[in-house]
Length: 302
Image 1: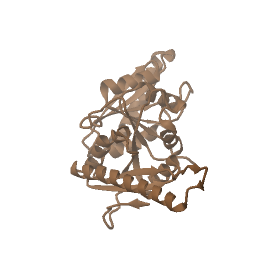
Image 2 (image 1 turned 90 degrees about the horizontal axis):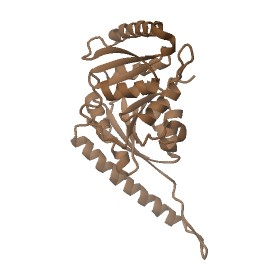
Image 3 (image 1 turned 90 degrees about the vertical axis):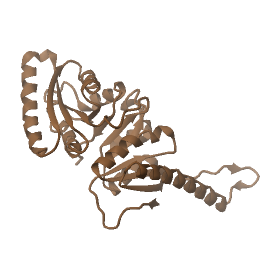
Image 4 (image 1 turned 120 degrees about the horizontal axis):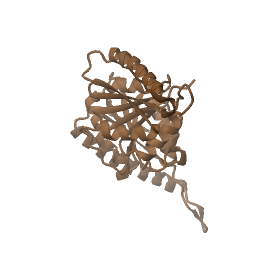
């Protein structure tokens, strides 16, 4: 069941979905989500997915009666509604134009994936520990499945850090490996440029084993991407810079994000032409080792 205060006839094309579970960790994603919604002028969608109640088996009476089950479910629903309405009220006071709340029942990850599609979300914002990367399910099985199986970009905020939402999103690093798949990260970057993002760093990490020629090729590639991006950003208040580094790709991306930008937007997979490194494994290491917010974009399937 969903509850919303959406204005009649209002159909924004970009919404921000924030999964909540009543914990402070989950709510730590709200400042950045609120900032995005305010600057973009879009709806903020708050969702809590409730499990189906499981009642204990009583040895003397068997399973508890159905009305008890219904009461437990109603109590869960009431508490969730109260929590979400409180969060929504605070978001509105912080300037978010429209806040909608959704209370659903079912398997959490699949429900979030379906809800992201249902509300036409352009971004899911959620918190993660991010200590051991996607491959070891450090995000928890829920966030891992949303990243791997969903189609909507996911902004992951590390619970161990408290990013300053007023400046975190102004500078963005976009790692590129020369592949079309990696360049899908540019679509979301363009959507954020201007109202949110003021500086974009296009990063290419060259393989030192290929010598100076690799650096020259990387620079030529970024020049081409730069020129294309300038056309897409015509009239936007956003500066584009290019950076070529050599070394370990994940380390270079993490260092660049912490030194030159607060946010990283990258595809979750995509191979360089020579197959020396893949965006999937690199994204995993960036998530594991980095401390700044990270957006993972899954290229369109099919």
